[in-house]
Amino acid sequence: QVQLVESGGGLVQPGGSLRLSCTASGIIFSRYHMDWYRQAPGKQRELVASVSRERSTNYADSVKGRFTISRDNAKNTGYLQMNSLKPEDTAVYYCNARLGMSAYWGPGTQVTVSS
Image 1 (cartoon, rainbow, N blue to C red):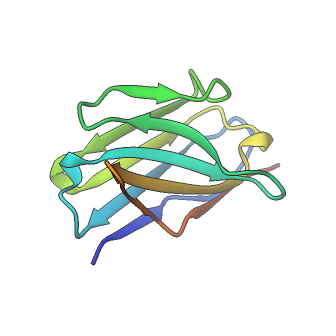
Image 2 (image 1 turned 180 degrees about the horizontal axis):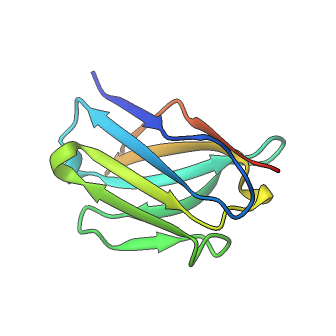
């Protein structure tokens, strides 16, 4: 049974930082590309950052220079370090592990940026 579980969300003030984690089980994590998505109320889910199994990374323009995606294959875990958070970063954040036609999602973790 494949399972992805996000953690690390919460309430933070503007300008603050959070580190999200996504731990996978039931797959050989190192073979999968990993993405972080987010969905704000009333908006479509959007891709925030990606890290390939070769560790190349890509970011949405809105988070470049503030967010860093990484992975630790030995721990079957991916990370999203979020700095200089803004109110518009408020959303449910989801991790996704994909390989070919296979894709798995976590249930999401809420991030709220507010004073």
